[in-house]
Length: 121
Image 1 (cartoon, rainbow, N blue to C red):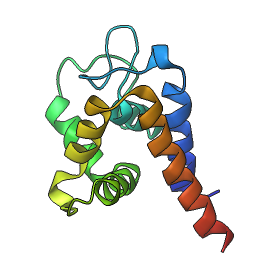
Image 2 (cartoon, rainbow, N blue to C red; image 1 turned 90 degrees about the horizontal axis):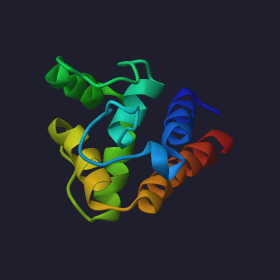
Image 3 (cartoon, helix red, strand yellow; image 1 turned 135 degrees about the vertical axis):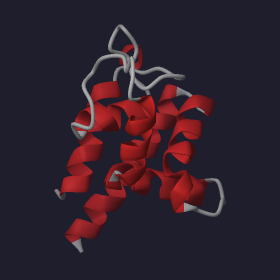
């Protein structure tokens, strides 16, 4: 499995259980996280704790993350939207906060399966 698929798989594991996933914040005081938070923790962009400061930097770092970019492109494809690189984390944030846990996990599964298919070709 390639690094990107590994990162997405690690992020999925962090929020696979509904009780570990949330909407509205990267990471909360209980360690629950949204999809972007899970990617940030899985890729060591930040720790599994609330971001008291540095939230803007966290989003800037997430915008540059290949995992976030891959998910943003997939969201745009699924929603028939034009992908704009400057909005990378916004697409993923919006998807997380406007869908149920099952759809968020489904997005990750689709991305991981697509990457595994590429690796096997």
